[in-house]
Image 1: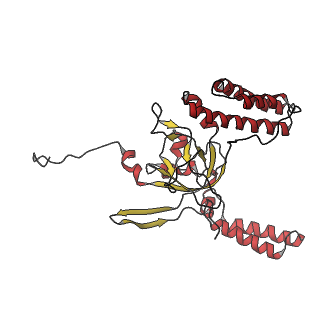
Image 2: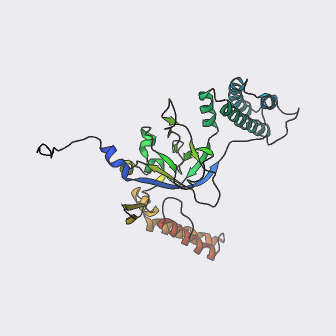
Image 3: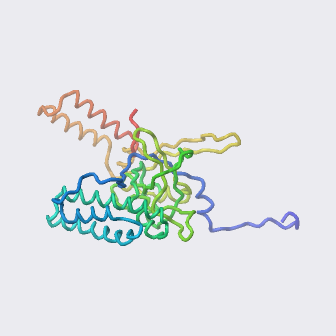
Length: 316
């Protein structure tokens, strides 16, 4: 335009998401995990065990790369049979536990064999999905990334530290809500030849007592404003950062919703709640079911809880 001495045009675009998505990152910590992979059976199999347990033991001992596909379908069928037999009282709780443990052991062994052979991508993908760990995380899908749940939007997700360590596990991420949809179970797979998504994320071993943080990127378009109060998880803390030539500066910190604020949205009043608990405590003291020092401690914790964050916080 400058070369031709033409006025600069006004450019109108509908690519709003692409323009603003990059400005925001969601960061949350992992609270705990559930691992299903098992390398060895936890119990000795005997002739007294139920037939279904003995069938699984046979599959475990006979499994090889030649019969892996056949045995995979057998195990999937047996898993359903185990539940049916237990439901009808044919299989005891102990036998069910032994059978399910064997299923996990077999599936873990199958994944090891399938990845070495690497000639059945669908089988490998199915095994990886079944054997994925569950990482329990301190966030709400419905509050902070509702498009993941509502329209299946894929957001870039990855650990944001320990990046000098190779992630050796695969997991899905589950939030703190009680909803079965409160999870991230689809991830961008930029390394796949024919697929754009994968069903598990590469993660590091979770070490109890050590912080482990995940980042979800490109959430700057509509996610915060679309988020709802499902299970009464409120707005998260927000930190406004400016990137500079020497690093970054923290411009502003916006605290997330407190429990009191979220409860007020659904017509619960803090003074009334405190008074209700106080009366209940007084009655308990008169009945002798709680000591005065316990009552003071309970009241203090209750008031602190109302003033606290709606997500889990480290104790001070």
